[in-house]
Length: 347
Image 1 (cartoon, helix red, strand yellow):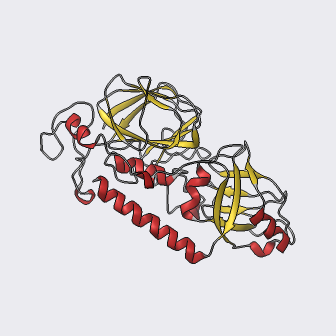
Image 2 (cartoon, rainbow, N blue to C red):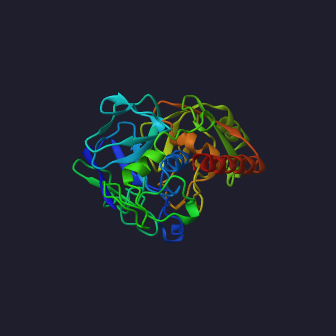
């Protein structure tokens, strides 16, 4: 491990996140993890990490970080005006940084959440197999909380750019110490230079705008709504409210009519579930969602569109379009195949 960043200013909400804490929902522990997992995965690929390595999730107003060691970083997801020493920092690209560099985020240009990955991954103690921060439960990350000024972040070992993921072992820490854990003599700086300059092809870089169309599979409780209510859901335009957070994206707009009571016996809530409470406005459940809930779910946002709603900010407009389950599976497989090819291309 090596110290890589000092937090000069924490920003609005900056947390340590990986791909989540899976396997504990039966015990009431939410998955948490990156809201826009796609962006985090690509940031990790750019710096040579495993896709599940922990990085920083940066919401709207980003932090100021002082670099403490030579390493390589990548910023993906929202464009929050990232700079290095006052100059624009390229997004969706691996960039070498040096001690004393200052990374800042000056404000929102596009999207809502940016992801910063560092070679070796942010190294905090895993809790139930994950380094993700679950804010409501106060677990994971750094003491279960968002970053604050004065925090010092550490990174794990650095990997050689041409080393297959299946055989990777931690190499030298990124603080300038020569020598690898496996005995080779490439310095961390040399390894970082192998990685720096990697760039994601344009076809893998999403654009975040408004209105946002989210494809959904209707159900599992769409029969708890009148035909007019379902028609409203699929034809109306909704607006992201200021109450949107990591738990759920709350929307305002035309009322969706229930066929009966707006309560059901509580059952499990998957990522992307669209709950409709008694007031008739939808909530899209995100990474920090509770494990069960008692409002009927009219539909579920398909996996490949979760990053779109993850990048929605208050005031953005949202529409829903129904697709079949088979179409959702096809699109998911297509995305995963694309990521597999990207990983090979970046290796």
